[in-house]
Image 1: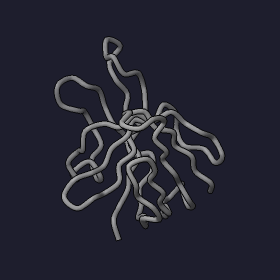
Image 2 (image 1 turned 30 degrees about the horizontal axis):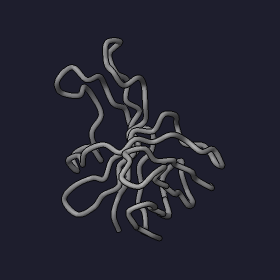
Image 3 (image 1 turned 90 degrees about the vertical axis):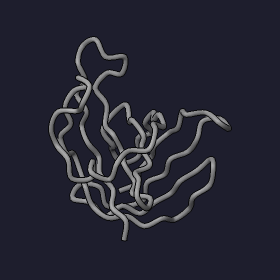
Image 4 (image 1 turned 135 degrees about the horizontal axis):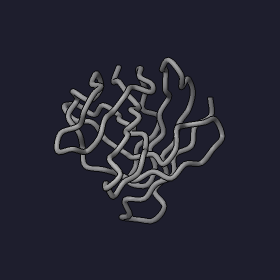
Length: 121
C-alpha cells in the first residue's frame, strides 16, 4: 500500500510562501505534492497549491530544507488507498496516526495549480 505524509513547513520570513503543510502522496518513485494553507481538519475546505513532485525521502524526513527554505516536522504519516484519480479530482482513504478517513483534492479550475483539500474523518 502506498504511503502519505504531511509535514509542517516553517519558512524563513523572506520566503514567498508562508507557513504551510506539505501533503505528499506516494506515486511510484515520486511524491505528488501540495502545499496546504492550514492543517487538515474534518469538514474544513482548505486551499491547496500543487507543487512539483518531490523525492520519496520526504516521507521519512524531518529537519532543514536545502536552499534556506525552512524546516519541516512530521505532522502525520501513514498508508493510503486510491479511491479516484482524474485531472480534476483525487480521492484517497487515509490511514494515518491523526487522519483516518476520506480525503479529496479538487482542482479549482482546469489546468490550474490551485486545489481545495477536504477530509471527512
